[in-house]
Length: 399
Image (tube, rainbow, N blue to C red):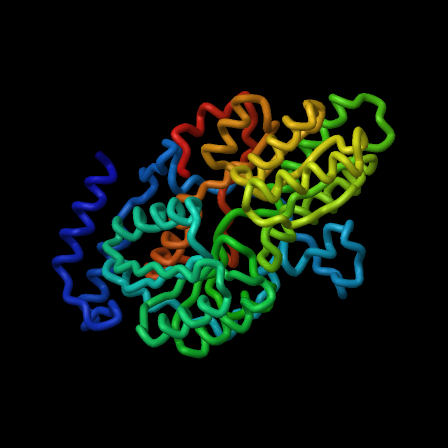
């Protein structure tokens, strides 16, 4: 009911004002009225498909550390080695970032460029649309289907369309600064979201929003370590392997080197046996894990996976064929596949990775910027580790 009221109010207000091309108001009076109307819209009552609050406040209260002089010189097992990715944005030079026009969010044209086609992406777009609809934004979505060259072409197309803002999921952390610079030089405001870019990209973006992937996986690593110790009391060495995300993007680093660097101090008895990126096909992951079981035998005590759907299905099948019920498995979540596996006891824990909330937070941040609100350098989604004890609270799944 509250969402219907929000949409009805927004629709009525949008019909009241005349917008010029590009979503900008035609005059000062209209701009002021639009701003006042936009500020009255309340999206806090919107829900995601799983019944959770769509824009749940962040629970991340980690203190931002001081940047080392040369993070790359530190070993990969040192959390500060990953500083420029994990804490991207906190040391940004925002001199080139445009200031808010303070003309309100209603009616603005926003282009959202994702990374690729996937059920997660569909849910992310659904969340973005819920907030865009509340503000009567004109949201256009583009997907390069995991092709960086195509994403660059879509950025050029978006620039030519002259929207009021571009929202971008960078496909590759290292090339994100070039993408962000191009958008900025075209005079179009930019918000990066979901996957973390190289820190230099943040000099050209209003903000970054999304999951604190490093932070979530540090939490997951501790949960994993505690359970692994409980299952193997007194063990002096515990072998673990990592099924990695697609190379290039920040999840590739956060979901592997995040836990590796966390466990180096939290549970030094946990040793990395191997780490590989087999892609997102269950059969390829199954073959990889089968090879690990042959190579490492009983020394393999746990697996940390970047994906709780296809990859985890492959892991579970390999363990089943080998008759191994002693291997502890955790993953990034939280798809229906992953949550079902948690319920069945085949997967110990997953992260709450709200896809709808991810898209919604990016669009809400855009609306807040149009409305003249102060925007922090980063806005993180709420963090939570899902286990069998509370998995039922997150049904029905978002994807």
